[in-house]
Image (cartoon, rainbow, N blue to C red; front, side):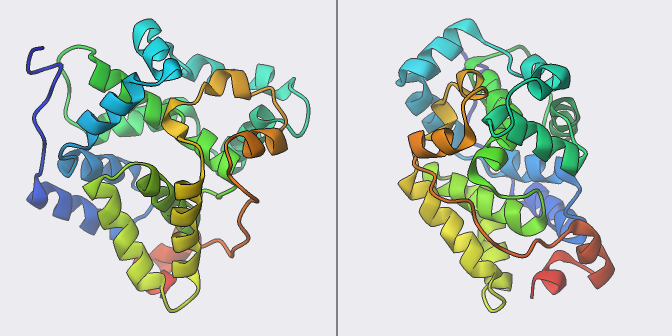
Length: 244
């Protein structure tokens, strides 16, 4: 295949350092997360695509290029689902966090380099981005600083990515004495024990009871922890101060 279909491994340490400095100051600066992931992606996208394409669901999605965003953006349809389903839990999550799939898509496009044409790599990157909040709803992690770090640890257990490891490692180190480190470590343990979430047919899971989804995916019980919000981080002068 050509160079666009198989991009070279990327390690832009200086760009990643600038992005993580900005993220430390403002955990809500979502484009910086995508910049860190892109800057330190290495071979992670190649390995993810290879494994994804070897699964029945992944192979089908790569053929059909299904876009899940219109489904997730249809809040009225989600609201018609029974209470207790994954779809309703997802709706509750995005409404409580005041976010939307389109907003996250826009943030990611500000945080990564423009690509010339849609490739399998691009599709999978977008699928992972667009289903991120379904991972929140399914696992039970909130959208606060601790919940995001724990979910990234969960993801890291499922697929190694140097950029993710940098964020998770820094969060664990600074939060290790306060109990936050234990929440992050538990996220990693849950990720190892769970089914492989990247290749799930999330569209078919939305109408199922959340408890059943958690059983099917071996997610275990939702976590119990004290959230740390980005406002507290900014008021304390940085994410590490708030988490210490």
